Image 1: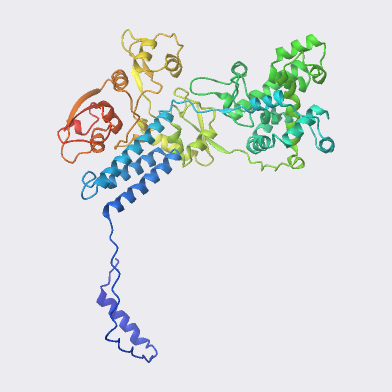
Image 2: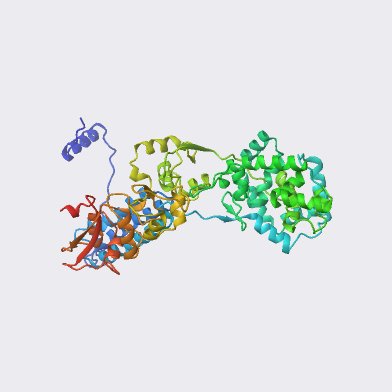
Length: 573
C-alpha cells in the first residue's frame, strides 16, 4: 500500500536528517535598513485570462488535429477530433450560444467541418473515380513531332560508343544519329523528365526484371515504361491507353487484364508487366526482330506488317528511313526507347544520379467485399496516398463489391493488423454503400432516373448490362447516392454534402424504406448541431430540409427532419 506523508511528518524527517549531518556554520551579514523615502516597487498585475479565448484556442487545436488526420485519410480519428473541437465549446459553463465570441466561433467550426465533409463525399462515398496522370508518351511524341532532336554532337557519339563497348545489352543498339540524337535530348531539354522516370522506376525495376527473366524477354525492354509512362501506374494517354505499360483496352483484355467499374488491371504494375512480357514474346514470334516488335508494340502489328508488304523491307531502320510507310510516332518510338535504355543502364556516365534500387514491399490481405480505402489507411496506420499508390488498379476509393478473392495491398508488416480489424468490424464501418430494393414495374432506366444517377454507372456497379432486366426484390448498389459518409460514421454526426430538397427526398424515398418525417420544435438553449446530433443526421441536411441559409435558431421554430425508424434518440422521446 502506498502511504502519503503529510507535511508535518515530512518536516520532521527533514529535521532529523539535518541533526544527523550538521551543516557548516556560515556568518550572515545583516542587510542595511531601506531608506524611509524609498518605496517598494509595486507588484506586476496578474494577467487577465479570457475564458472564451482559452476555449477557442483549445477548439482550434483539436480542429487542426482533425484536419491532419483527414489529410492522411484517417476518418475515424478525424471525426473524433472534429467532435471534440465542437464539444469544447458546447460544454462551456455558459454554453456555446450565450457568449457572442463562442457562438460565432462554434458556427464557423461547424461550417468548416461541413466543408471538409463535402470534400470527403466528393472523393468520397467510395465511388468517385480516382484521377489519372498524363502519359509520358504523349509529351515525348509531341517533342518528336514538333521539335525533333538535332544532329548529335561528336562528344555524345564518343561517350555512347565507349559505353556500348563496356556495357552488355540483350537487344541490338545501333550507333546511329537517330538514337544519339535522343541521348543528347534526354541530357538536355528532357533531362528532368528522364530523371523523374529513373527515380520512380527504381522501385518497380526488380519486379519487372524478375518477370521478364522468367518469361525469357530481354531485360533491356524493362525500361520501355520510361518512355510509355515514366513508370506511372495511373498514366492515361489521349488515346485511352492506361498504366505503366500503356495497354489499350482490347489488347489488355486479350492478355487477361480485367477492366470494369471498380478495377482496371492495366494499372496494376505486376499484372500489367506479366501481360507486357507475354505480348512482347508474341510480337517477337511474329517478326523475329526486337526492333520491329517494339514498333508493333506502339503502332500495332497489323500496321507494321502492311508497311513491310508495301515497302518490301524487313529491317526497321530501312523501313523508317522513308516517312511513307509508318507514322512519325512509330518511327521515333524505337530510337527513343533505345536512347533511354542506354542512359538507364549507366546513368552516371550521362550526368544522371544513379537511383537507389529498392524493391516495393507490401502485404496482401484478402477482402470479401467493398472496403473503403480510407478505412484501410486508418487501420494500417498508413496514409490514404500510400494505400492508393499500392493499389493503383482500383478505379474508385473502394475495393470491388463482388470480388471474393480480391487482395488489397498494404505496407509491409501491417497485413495482420488489417485482417484483425476486418474480422472484428461491423459491416457499417467498412464502407458507405447505399442500396435500392427493386419494386414492381421498375427498370434500370427508371431507377437511375429517380435516383439521379447514370444508367450506365448503375448497371456497371452491379455487374449488369445496360439493357438488363431487373426483378422485384433485387438489391442494387447505388453509385454515388447521397448517403452518410464515413466521416460521420460515429454517434455524433458532422455536416455532409448539401443536396437539393427534391433530389434528397427522391433519393431517400427510393433508397430507404424505413425513413419517416418528424417535426422538432426548438427549445431554449438548443443549437442546430445539438439537434442534428440527437437525431443522428447532419447539420447540412437540417439546413437543406428546412431551406436555412445559416445556423440561427429561434425558440419555437419548427424543423422538418427525416430520420430512420428507430435510428434517432430524440425521435423516440
